[in-house]
Length: 358
Image 1 (spheres, helix red, strand yellow):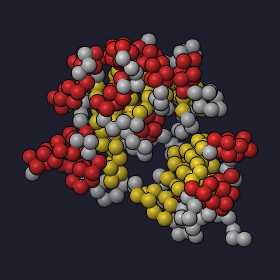
Image 2: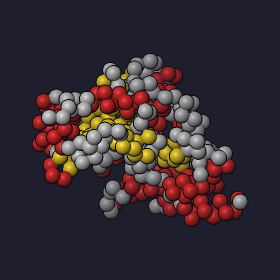
Image 3: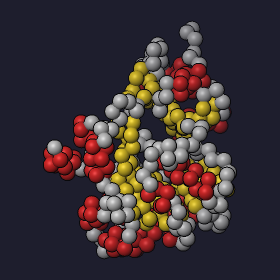
Image 4: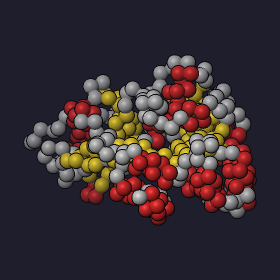
């Protein structure tokens, strides 16, 4: 019988190569993602039984029972020799177990280290409001949020409750006090944890994912009633994010939701990670900062007009469209035109702007 690869040693190598992800799928070599691109590791192809033995070495009997019953398992793990990982186990064709590991830095990067826009430090100084960080999977949402909370932790005396599935970044108490809750282990659901968090004297609440109407409703209410609420959605633009929230409701509920969102929304930060010229990746942001004009458009069901307000307000309030961010990155030779077009949410607008500027 062939030796089973050591999963801990493999994860240690993932961190050494500065890879963001490791994938174990049967009939393939282990594959790692570096700067957004998958690369096969120089190892033999794995079969389902080998992957199962590797993966089961990392989990408890309770977790083994859960993956066998539910066919899915989400958790996070800290390995002293390798680091911290967000993990998903799942089944593929022929009943083979597969796994995806996402690396989580042990040291939380600062907003300055991430070269985040200056407006981020202003936004997190608010006393209440809903701050949404959005983008596709792997776009750096968790890292941005962790850096924001770390900035608060270094400067403010706040009680911060985080609700995640699973917990990713681990925050040490500095000036602030953290209550970190893992959905499944510490609470039954995002909605339940969020509802009860309002009785736990929070200043700030992080909702790892706003998955359903109940969670969204409670988050908006919490933001309205004197708390800062951070949340994430898998949307790619500010306008799409607002529409996604409103569309979670039906009929007359949408009117009330628009009114509540108009009052509670502070900012929408949509981000994408693009390949950087010379290697690595760079975050491209679209930033909506709510103001009376934006709030009025939300209230009056004129969300489609928000984008033009963002175009006009660049520089005055820290607002910027993705196209404007792309053009700045192109001007500074940080990204290529090909990748700008590939990742753009407004490709025709971007193409016209590039042509006009050339």
